[in-house]
Length: 335
Image (cartoon, rainbow, N blue to C red):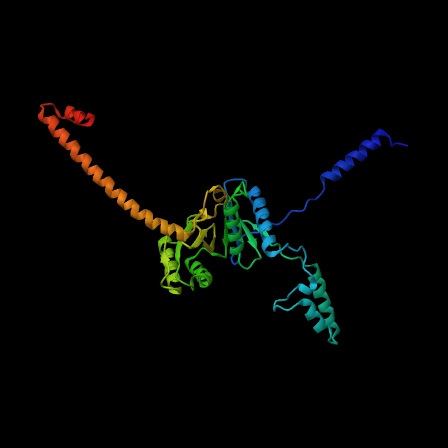
């Protein structure tokens, strides 16, 4: 037997009110902090779409290089602060006769089984519009970024619509000269204590800061030359680029390869580019083209001098005929 209309209406109102009172979980925002590493992504608009494209691209290529990302961590793979497996530690300590120690070890094991693995990529707030930072648990984000850049340059497939630049960041520090130099010294050892190479320093900022740009670049160049005095500065085709990005209150640092050659890591421009020549070939071509350009300039200069002489001679002849200066110039130009 169906309930009366009044009661049915009351049930519908209660159902509607309960549905409105449904609680939704709100995710706590994470912010960029010193000591993190990851990928700095820029876009022209639609930051959320840019974040989704970052996740898709990074996960796609990371699965190829490092394997699929596991959702949970196993107890026997969990490591403590000393680098030992938690399961082995529990088994060793569980052999003691102390009941309290065993109870504590069991609590640690339960906590280890419930603990999730940190996500391989996680977006954090930068405080700068159209600038996204994806932090990572990878020790060095540069190889993954290089793999993405080289694959897009080779296949010419546009992988993003809103994401423009994707730059790996190896260190994040506070915006002070001392902190930047200290972080730079830490990452320079791996890349500049090698054979002589060419380098450049790229300095970008999103807000006004009290840091003197020229002094900072000079100090970083001195730091690089201290590793090897034979390193040379090359602003056109550097093999190594020291990338500096000053955000609101933090600074992102990284050393990347072939930054200019790969369109400053612009994924859209890289997919549209016809060709990305090698640095050695470019340098050789520049030398040949430089010689050819010098010869062309000399020939053009000679032609200009010859034209000037002919023009002056025609002008002089026109003036001797008794015409005024304006008509003389017109006669010379027409002839």
